[in-house]
Amino acid sequence: MIKTLALLSLNLGIALGFNHQAPLRLNAEPSANVRADRGSSNSTNNTNSDEATSSIGFDDQLWGKSGDKLAMLKSIDRSLKYLETPAAIKAYQNYPIQGIGRDRVRRSLVRFRQLVNSSKSAGELQAAVKKEFVFYQSVGKDNKGTVQFTGYYEPIYQASRTQTAEFKYPLYKLPANFGSWKDPQPERLLLEGADGLQGSKSALAGNEIFWMRDRFEAILVQIQGSAELNLTDGSKTTVGFAGGTNFAYNSIGKELAKDGKVTPSQLTLPGIIRYFRENPQELNVYIPRYKRFIFMKETFNGEAMGSINVPVTPERSIATDKSLMPPGALALVHTELPYSVDGRSIQQKLVSRYVLDQDTGSAITGPGRVDYFMGTGKIAGERAGVTGGPGHLYYLLLKG
Image (cartoon, rainbow, N blue to C red):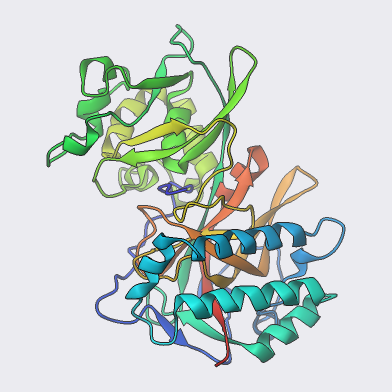
């Protein structure tokens, strides 16, 4: 959804750039030991390293009563649709990894779709994939395959189409003259003021489309890049990314940590939200440090869109650096992800998940970063807010 980053707090490491080095390497026998990379872990998962290695490609979430096989197939179809577009043809014309081209990516998706349909279990699919596909592993942020994972989601918030005493923090559409804004473009502070209420005195004036009652919620809409809005007139709608100023992403969580305002254990989205609720005056200090300004557009109850202009699918779409990674391609993530237990608690689970690379974000740079789409709403937000740890990323292509 061309969003910035769901997890404000865990973007503390600096992912390595391309540096004239291929971001992927052929790895015919993939292995991963996530827990060894993580070091000490508070996870409730007791999987040992041998089991972690053998679980590569064992995606047990596709089957069972709560399985998302149909969602997986729909996500594949969306990537296949993208691969027929002029944008995909252009993106793959000069893709730098030998052996990875648009036709091979397309054929791989078609065959994987057939295998998902015909396989009766996670083990059967895993065996077929290992027989017919080769794995290209991301070199990661350390050239050893270590990838930092975060999560993002689509929030649901209250909003108003008109400004009121309660709903006073605006979301803005892209100004008609934005294309003529000259560098250096104005920082957030100059556009909306320290309190977020001065947009009527800047180049933002007249571009308000919705008003939020919580300032940090308004910022999170920009950071996530989409949201569902329950409006005060009883109707519902959605908003999505429309554009942004050309500043690099700067983590608000990182700024809080740098100033000693939060401890490492509080560096989660829930922890940051809690800090600002207890210290609302600090919003005027830390939000302006996020210099980039994001514009939104009403999408009229549409689905959250990825950067390749297809809807993203919960649990089956990821965001990566699209200057390096193959857009729309089939991938496999191997990492610990949080899951809701009876809607009351969150527990970490070591998983392999087949995903489609359908999105990007300004904070997702280099071969060592992946953002995993959790879905829409409260539970998705709780999970995204505590996603953050090492793992491995593979791209799957048919042999030959």
